[in-house]
Image (tube, rainbow, N blue to C red; front, side, top):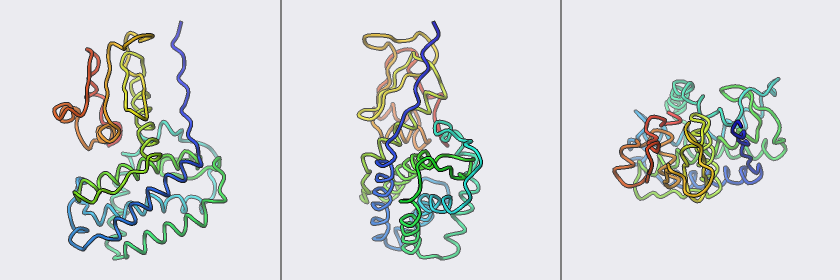
Amino acid sequence: MPPAKKRTRSYDPTKIRTAVLAQFAAVRTAVAGLTPEQLAAPTRLGDWTVRELAAHLTMVLGSVARYLDAPEPDKHEVPLQDWPFRTSSASAQVDEDVHGIVDAGTDLDALFAHAADRLAETLPGAADTRLVPSRFGGMTLADFMVTRTVELIVHTDDLNDALPGLDVPYDRQALAACTRLLADALATKAPGGSVEVRIPPYAVVQCVEGPRHTRGTPPNVVETDPLTWIRLATGRTTWAAAREAAQVSASGERADLGGLLPIMS
């Protein structure tokens, strides 16, 4: 008997919209209080300083209003579960756009205010099923908003890493959606049922070809916390480093995920 086809995970669009706005507001508040020295601090993102990172965070939300202003695409081209695998193709263009904003000298407070204001004008009346022209092709607005949780949570973590003690909070719903999408991406990348990956309290997925687990304790189990998982999935840390720091537990001969990570880079 062939294995049962896994159902695509669904997200509550209203909760996702609320989570995106909440996480953006948390970042905006934190950035507003930064000194010039803090804005000039390096990040783990190549040559980006905190200023470039903050500018990019305004783009994360600004893209929603920009796409809603654009003509609706003719067809749906990018399923949500495929989005994580396409992001690396846009990294050079994103870097160019970010440096262009910073080089223009636009005030960060003004950028955050403009992004928030434009979203308040365009998002409330937009249907979740409306297609938007993402960088990678047509997506539903509902799916695109889920991708914003990934961008916001990942880069909030980058911001906290760059400025120890800043402690920008993570909205629970945004963190959950980000964790789940990246966990599902792993299951898409390595389909199967021989390894169970647990990321409490948000996600459990099975992946990797091999004997399928049906009952009792799985023979191959990986468990970690949401932020460690997100860092692994996006290349912010390595499998070896996370294991060495006891941030990941892995049991079973198939439970080494090092060759499958990162998911996004």
